[in-house]
Length: 495
Image (cartoon, rainbow, N blue to C red):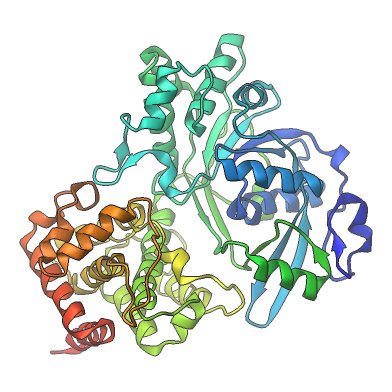
């Protein structure tokens, strides 16, 4: 019978399972994290757990919180098991379970006063966040902060008295500390965004600018927002994973995390309020994160998009199954070689061809259980970050764009809402109704899909792209996904 996870039951777990050798009362809070979902607990919290295991920096324990209703349920479940999480790392030939204990408390979302009190606590020296790529109130076309978003307008109208957004909470905490004469905490984004530190300061200061512009200037001039690149494939947890944990490891955990063994975290070393010695457990501290994050976003995240939409249209469920499809795997490889890697600038101490091979191996990992639907999620936010910038650079350099255009056209076809076998595709984007309507128009009028300036910006003004998109989408509708990929691969090898 599986053992219910708690501090009291750690000694009952099997000998192969690594458990914390430190006690909760040996930890003190140093970091407040907003958004304690799977990725945070597989990545940042796991690094801190390893640091605490080394006997280092135990005054950097995590206090979690959130801004969504689902975060409240997460917090209750974690509190019921003493804020422990089982992290299961999986490779093709082995799996390893580790119980982590870097979190020591959770403040429920909606209790703005209690969250702000934690932010004002002098022991809080870093506030970090994982609120997803779509949670930063960015205009997709300009990639700039959108001060007109209703959530931002509401926090500004309330003058940050009881903020509901992560950025309103951070701003209120910083301003309270300033008024009390306390040093500012560092704000650290752990989301998958290019220049995530710059994006975060734009959101925090942009919100404050609507209330008190002088305070916004103070934030820009006095608060550190280091950029960082994060990477670890971490699917959503379902009953499938909870059952596997019970059956394979004898642990009953409401919120386990299953992820790949690979991980990477690259950070700008800009922490004036201090930081944990994460370099001791593998974090890279560098002067400039930009080359690393551009590599990851364009090759890994762009690669995910490349396999997601053809696989979704062909009724493939798991990512590793898509990689077992020789045609999809060949399309990914050709696209990365011909159109993506050539416009990725050099990365220190990194061979991009080796990085590509690592990505392909990671995608093919059968143990992860990552789903194609997850990769297809939120294309209206992800395409402008992961595909379209590469396409712009390729156009500017006069390089091939047929593969990137095919990815964008396959996304359009996916948003039609029906796979090639006639199966309905459930809504999979916050803007699904609009995307579906545009995709249905585009079946007969391809340029209709490009008439979304918040996504495509001025790209449709480029005749080469516009005409290539039209041809490609028509081919998909006339001949199907496989024939369209075959056409791309054949044209690539033609003299």
